[in-house]
Image (tube, rainbow, N blue to C red; front, side, top):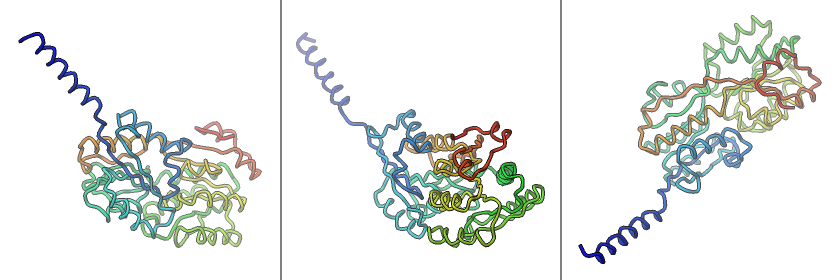
Length: 333
């Protein structure tokens, strides 16, 4: 080969490499549907979403480079989830991240092909998966359900906080999916007897601000000594209102999510949401890489945290027992 031809060949090869180097990375799109405010998805102060985006970046899925993240809000209105799900599906994202069982069911009804990475309660009871080990279908994800025993633990912590408490309100909804199972009802009864307290149902007909206010208005008539809030995504969407109503009622309360304490609530005994959302990011990354959603096991929490908000305690005129403070994983001053 002549030197001139060899030089031209090298130049051409270099040009091809340069063209490939300049080609933009393939863009993938994920849609996150939250039951609550969508603005929280890109709020760095919200640990769960921050951890989720950071873990995706660590795995090579970088927002703004090869990944687009669109956020959608259910606005805490379950009646609108079906229409929202159809809207999101019509935009054909590669993966949909669904927060709460109700949102996941709405998305599944809208599509049989787009993978759904979900976070919520018991996926088998909710009809979202065949089993934890092999969910089947298009919905892997993580469950915050650590077993019914966690509710006995929450009651115990509240009793330690207010030893004189004999009546505890249990804030829940009347929907079939959120009603305590027979096993949970039995556990709550056993814990109540052991702790010498009685549980007072505080059931909202639907998760709307007027209905939540109605239930709290009844607290004055049948006043408990404290409140336990059930881990329902539809209630979580109204966490700020619930925390404010609890504060107005001058009652200590224990919550099932960190978000309530960040909104000003007194205390929470919760699964580590950072751990759960890191696992969600791993599932999204695996699906974008070609993994079959139905083959990805559903993850259960292994780490738990006790969070105590001393500012809320002071507002109630409540002194947290030193032994309980010593056990806390995080104390908010």
